[in-house]
Image (cartoon, rainbow, N blue to C red; front, side, top):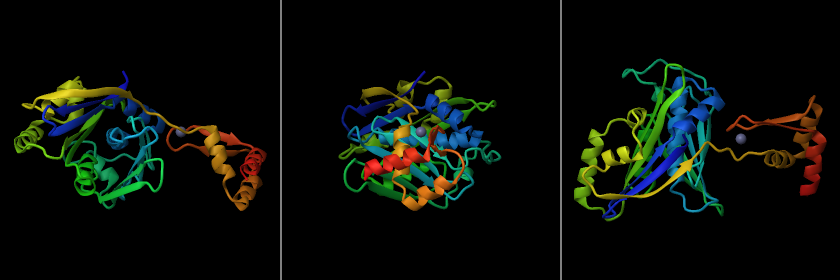
Length: 293
Ligand SMILES: [Zn+2]
C-alpha cells in the first residue's frame, strides 16, 4: 500500500491537521540505506516530518530541505521534500545502533543528539531560499519540529511522529501529523485541542494497530466539527539522474578534472539519497564542459 497524506480543516477555520501514513516510504528508505532499527526510526521520523512540511509549500517547483545536526552518533540527517510530500533522505551513519532508552524505546534522541540545530530551507525556485533554524530540544524530532514552528513560523503547531520497527528490522508502521492553530482561532477550540492532545496515543502505535487517517484525525479533533480537505499518495522519490551528475562534474574546475583524469578507471558518482551509481569517462566530462562554455 502506498504512503499518503490526508488534510482536514475544522468547520470554523480555527485549526487544520495534516496527517501522513509513511509506512511504505520508511520501508523503502530502510531498504536503500540498510538502516539499523534506531536509524530506521530516526530517518523515518525525519522523512515523515519533511513530507508533512513539504506538503505545505505552494508551487510545484518549490522544495523543502530538512536538516538535523545534533552532534550525536547518527551524524547529519538530510531529507528533501517536494510540494506534494514526495521525499528522499539520508543519514551520515545509517547503521549505528544504540541500546533502547530508559522507556524501552528506540533511542532516537540519543542517536540524533541535541547539541545542534534543526534547519529548514525552503527553495521557492527564485531568489534566495528561505532559511529557518532552531536549537534542538530533545533530538526526538517531533518535539524539535514543534519548537521550530513556535520560533520560526507564525502558525502554532504540534508535530507528532512515530515509527515502529519489528524484531526482524522490517517497518511495522510509520506516520505523523502536524496540528496547526490558524489565525483568529476560537479559544474554546484551542482548549479542546489541548485536551485531545493530552489523551492521544502515539501515532505509530495507532497506525500499527491499523488506524487510518480518519481514526487519527478523529482523535486529534475529537469534539470538533471538521471536513476532510484533500488526500493524495506520496512516495520515496529521488530526482537524481545521469545528466545531473554529468553537468555537476563538468562544472568542476580544470584542476579537479586533471586529478580525476589521473585516477585509474571511470569517474564514479554515487547519489546519497538513493545509492544509484553513475560512471563517466573523463573525455565525456570534458566534452560536456566544452559544450557548457
Ligand atoms: Zn538519487
